[in-house]
Image (tube, rainbow, N blue to C red; front, side, top):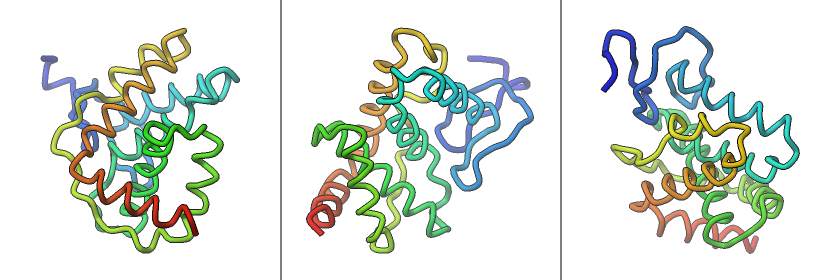
Length: 170
């Protein structure tokens, strides 16, 4: 493992990354280094139209791995909605556009979402994906990351699938 003096553990996903100064998200708690890796992926996705199909999975996966403390309503809603969109894309095989349209509808019911205790460990993080940013393996690695994150949240699959399916028909 890397030298502790030069590395921080991300408060969200647990990745050990070189300590840097920089911005973080407003409520998706992360280290600056982790947030920088996420932004590296986003920059590639925004600049390469072939990666737009992957973009929502990138956002969803980062969001569910940086859930905050669950003390703010927006943290609870973020986790629930992003887990729902991962579920729709990976398990219901909806296209990113379809999943996004459904998520926008689900947003009308976000106040009904409850706090979900995050996994204690994530099996794959942005740190294992960022080196593939912009390469031919970018989309595949993001999809693997999303699938791993979904599996890591397995204790809440029943709740998310029931909640999503209930409000999808509304």
